[in-house]
Amino acid sequence: MNIVENISLKTYNTFGIDVKARFFVEITSLLQLQKVLELTAYPEHFILSGGSNMLLAKDIEALVVFINLKGVSVVEETENEVIIKAMAGENWHGLVLWALERGYGGLENLSLIPGNVGTAPIQNIGAYGVELKDVFVSCEAMNVKSGELLEFDKDACQFGYRESIFKNEEKGNYIITSVKLKLTKQDHQLNTSYGAIEQELHRQNIVHPTIKDISNAVIAIRQSKLPDPKEIGNSGSFFKNPVVGRNKFEKLQKAHPDMPFYETSDDTIKIPAGWLIEQCGFKGKRIGDAGVHDRQALVLVNYGNATGKELLSLARDIQKTVKKEFGVELKPEVNIIK
Ligand code: EPU
Image: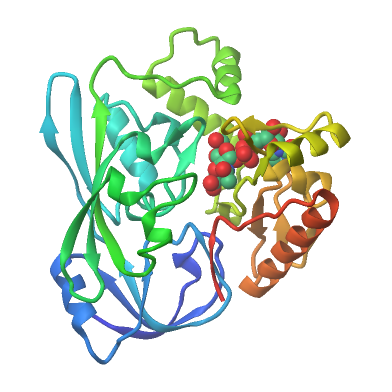
């Protein structure tokens, strides 16, 4: 275990923000993690894994604990289903490909989401009609105070839209070390209801898609509108899609009949934040190296040397304008460290 000092975190966050870690340690085993948490010389920790859902707007004075736990295995298997266990430091898309290679279904709609396995439950990652919770069995997490490992089943995680207990009541109290998922070996539950998937399959003349076809369609859709963090720094959707009450929705719809929306319950409606941001004229806008992606206005981008503060200031400008124009509050989806 090697604690290094004053290193740049630029390559450890997908936004590519160049902030410094005063202290940094890479963890490759549970025992190491327990030992690090016991070190009294470093009482404050900052847990980092894929760095795909954070905006770093300041240097980190705490000990940065880089979770690089690896391994994927099958823990239970029946004729139709399989339960797999993946360690927190595995790359998410790598796990999706691992499952597809073995013919395991359930993760195909979640192809190409940046980040690691351990952070997936924190915000209940989701895309194209599927959320992590649909395949989730449980996760193991270490209590940062006691070093004890605890198992959280699906109910205990309190999943919601980009939400879980790890973002709320238990924020900062646990480090997720591994995740168990239930996947199908046959009779896959294909989810092609999302319009963009249907269109992509149609474009490719695929009538009876396999899980691999769906994954390929999702990859094609994502590549056509979401920037690759390896090329342009970003953290996926920066804001959550706001959910409004029916009264408010009806007023908005009257003024903007072409506004897209999804009913989330009888009296709540979700409005795409990307549409609201585009209407306010931000799509493709660039201030220095901080910008709004030109093909998906919900994604903020770092063209090279933007600081966290510059991106944050752009985000605030967007929030203020959307509030003024539509009376709707945008809440960040990414974790802002300021
Ligand atoms: N739209 C615009 N302008 C834009 C962007 C979107 O008008 O610049 C409109 C689209 O035309 C469409 C609607 O908004 O009618 C929804 O757009 P899209 O299908 O791209 O999805 P989204 O609601 O913007 C959400 C997730 C994404 C996920 C996609 C697909 C959130 C916050 N984001 O985006 O997740 O990939 O659906 O399921 O829920 C992420 O969380 O990082 C992420 C990328």
